[in-house]
Length: 239
Image (tube, rainbow, N blue to C red; front, side, top):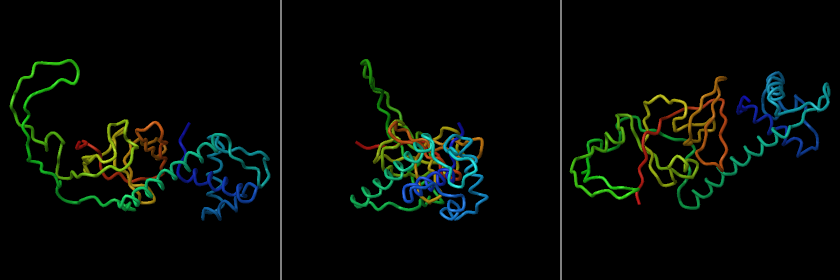
């Protein structure tokens, strides 16, 4: 099944909201007024939603025959849950003294990292069966290890949407601004509302995008448009 676009989700939400407020399904004209688009545009979205199985026409030919299918209700409730989770994260950030920023400004020059810094590699230690402890001194350049380039920067992670990718709240991700994203990459994505999020990147054949969290309890984000401001190449964590 093709994923929902952002506009199609908005149509579903508008229908559901109108039903809750009035007890009736909206007409195409009412939908257009609610979404600030013309009737022809709404008609196109509605037809797509009917084909995808998110809407059904209970009274063909009637002006108020549209209704959400179980799939449509699930999509709206999932979107509402995501919105509530974002709001909760914002409230938590304000409560902790960290104000959420509406947009992300990426450094335009320099890496901001000590690319030439190196640390001694004193040997290797087992995380499974024990091995003989042998000191074997060599230096590891952190810049090489983290794949630091001119357009590399750090971001502090807030939230748990990427925990299954071993990225936790409080970690710092190393981001390459000049690296084109590939399917499945973890990227810094800017959404239509200018909010920034860290997710796995999945472009779709119809020109839309799916941003997939690495947390089984969270739902993906469906986008008509987005801006990728970097690809994650490493993670830093202190204990």
